[in-house]
Image 1 (tube, rainbow, N blue to C red):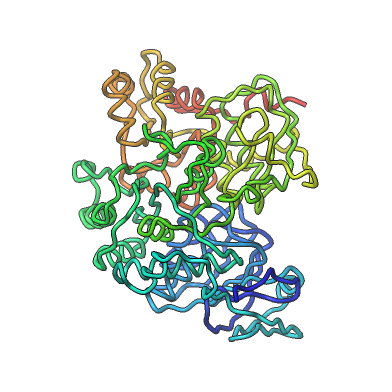
Image 2: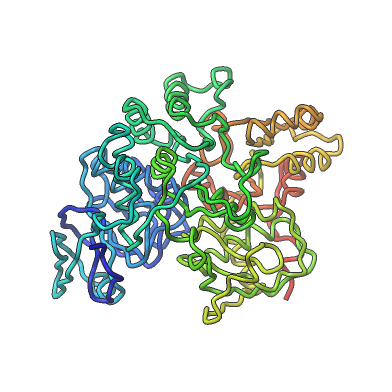
Length: 569
């Protein structure tokens, strides 16, 4: 039987295996991508309370994960190198790291048990110092927790599902549907759902595991069966050889992208697939990965997709099937937290990434409804920035904003707790994301990828001026947006201002020499990149509006003071 809903004193084993180790208990979740060094297991997210510690060999407890869908790939890399946690224990529904552990176990023979515990059992284990996980239970000092296995035998599968499980469409598809079924059974869901399209996230060469995985699946004959787009990659696919990229890195990054193209995915290479001409429609059931893309698709477009972890996105695209749970259901889209915002006057576009980052912090494990902003204007790019920043601090796949998102009026749980955010919260968030130097060497725009509207605005803001002699401004964007900017002359205007526009990669994958080695002062308009910048580049960032980014690109000097609107209240 599929395991029933957990009681507070028991557990469910999702990935089989035995392990033991010292317990490392997190009070809050973490994004393994950008938060954990894939080469060592050290915690590099400077905003996390456990910064500097290591997860290697630990029985790692956290309520649930958060942040990027790419965390599953980081976990696989740690497993392949022997630096992974000994086991993972959660008390909330979790998919990203669970999927990474499943891939490590089922495809690469690196077992890593994953268990979900009821809240009382979790709390008892979290205060212990050492734990042993074995079939049927977990033991620690004075603690014994029974654990039942998640099984797929009673899932409500179609005839085709059963044929694929039996190997009728080859070993790659068989492996894919098996892992999808385990993920489905892990929370008691009984059925799968069809999806109309996919988006692949695990195509950045942040570590070798992504390349190893993709080429293994391609060599097994994997093929996507629904239209599938590809996320930003690690190089400008057509031009990296002329950009000073090391040959070994450029070739491996290209091989990774090409492996997904071999499997039938479209070479879109953008982290903002919602900017493509054929964007999903409201109510459309899709199978996307990449945290900002998923959150935007659900929140702004009204499409339906959980935040599928890396690798599961490929399995879904290969089968056209996904677990029928989470935000695929009406109940799964309900807001379980209300966040009232004391709306300031005269905000600029900096307000929206600060809002997303703050809302995520106050709703790390559930979908929130934001109220109080009904009279505050927001562009689609403002909402894009909000969704991306929300994904760095919350594990939820969407949020509702009254007056701005289409499902907000219908998705409030009347019993949801209420939190109020005021001026002091926004000022504290600004200070947290503005730890970088005020002398700026590099202005980084395009995380997520810039839209054509943002390019037009930047061109207008320069007003015939140029970037200063000591300051570079680099914009990352999708190749479709780049072509459109070239057609209407915006590209030429920005290039005349000294702005460098690079397609295919985004700031979450930019490395030297695209990232100038000498650059110390970093400014961005992206709450997502401001959050992850230190872990990715070793530099603290500053966060500013797009207009201030242009001004600083010209002057080279950022203000040490927050904008005037942050003085409200």
